[in-house]
Amino acid sequence: MDRPCRTATLIVLARLCLASLALAQQPDPGLRLLTELVNANGASGFEGPVRDILRREWQGLLQDVRADGMGNLLGTLPGPGGSPKVLLMAHMDEVGFLVRYIDERGFVYMNNVGGYIDQSVLTQRFTITTPQGPVVGYTGMKSGHIVSADERNRLVPLQDMFLDIGARSREEAEKLGVRPGLPVTYRTELEPLNGTGRYLARAWDDRIGLAAITEALRQVRSHPNTIQVAATVQEENGLRGAAVVYPSTNPDIVINLEIGIATDFPLLTSPKLAQEALGKGPALFVFDGSMIPNNKFVDWIVKVARESNIPIQFESVSGYGEDGSILQRSAQGIPAINLGVPTRYAHSQSGVIDRADYDNTVKLLVQMLQKLSAAEVRSIREF
Image (tube, rainbow, N blue to C red):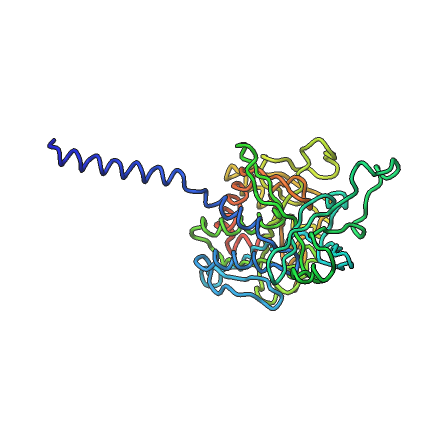
């Protein structure tokens, strides 16, 4: 081989090596979407940043992507003529707070939107989203040096907590753009947990459900149904967005995606309260405080999971409500199910999920969509 040929060959090999290296270093697309969704600020009633992400992602996957009057984002993936309508649903909002009051010294007080244990709110960093941009705040407390003995074991109620935003007066806080009614969210971002395949982040509830739906739409191939999708608003504030989804979708069957309640950690781990663990697969809810699902649908999902070698867990928990229950009670009644990605420390500053559970949830969802034919839906609906 002469010198020019050797040179050309080396150049080609070098380019191939660089391309392979670039591909290897490319961020995981699934993790990239999860990160973007959980890092977006979207308390109940202020879901705009999340809706913008989904609108962008769904444009190439769905037809007729649109928002309704409540702010729910809807879309359709048409199927064969006369095919059943399968609704996929997850909510955009996260548990958060709204500014209630600003005192004369510039300290900000909040109302909660969604269920919290008060002790998880104190001494945390927060973001107030204002028309002028984000404002950083901190839920301060007394220095330990001046806390009396009888105060040390006393919980501070949320109504007495305040955000310190650095302002010296109400006027200075207002100049920063802060006013009553603006949303407040925890100031945290997703972090991989030390190479374990587990991630720490806020707002898994329910951004992980939205990510799973989006990824399943990317992966699904032929499907014997019409797939409808709804990303709902204000779930944490009384399942409000879901209440208007039925007239826009008129589904035959509903699959709701949510977090599951993992309790496989040293504190409060009684299986009498919740049954899930990280790494053991998606959770199939057989009971929650808002819905007893169609048991034919439960059995059908168990069958699909076993045929596809996808691990699943069962969950039965009373202190839980979800959007699927609203659709179940719509019209003459619609078979609905709730699937959850197991999550530790829900409704707090951060939670932990296992990537394998997320991936298996997507796999299960894809299998369900590819097998929910008219005959299967009819069999599930018949009593």
